[in-house]
Length: 213
Figure 1 (cartoon, rainbow, N blue to C red):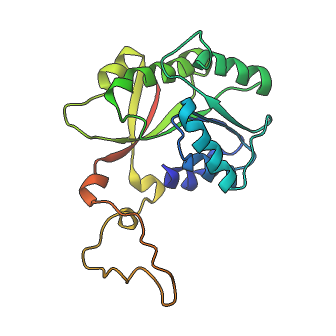
Figure 2 (tube, one colour; figure 1 turned 120 degrees about the vertical axis):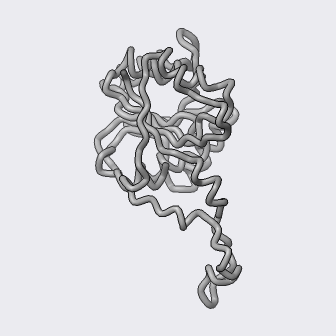
């Protein structure tokens, strides 16, 4: 996801972007550093918001009423505190704009949350901005799981984003069995091992764009 937003950073310039399930907020951090001016809303559940704010502080970024918000957002709820409709009203009232893009990194993790997530996405697209797009990294953890019936139910469609479209280099993230443990560091450098994953695991991760039918 972060590779994608970095490669397309100019596309996001002057946009209003909502990151859902932000957590460590890496895609938003990339955009905040690289694509100004833009308006960012980082959202998550209450227990995770301190992590979101901590990541902003570590990257010397501050919340701002004019360009950078951190907000609680409860998926699947409408008409209550911290629900999607209240957030959309706040955006329209204070920024006089609409959400252009929604970002989500591995938000399709727990199947119990899938419909609540897509209800939230559907509300934004069908009630707020029909041209809004949800860009997400999706890992297929089981062949028995599918979001297609939920997409159909909530009037959404999904398309695959080819890795070639943002020059994704999978070898940066996969194990090289022929590489010695010390080969990844230069002489005199401390040993900081990069985060790696199995190629088979990475092959199950896809970039998707979800939009109105």
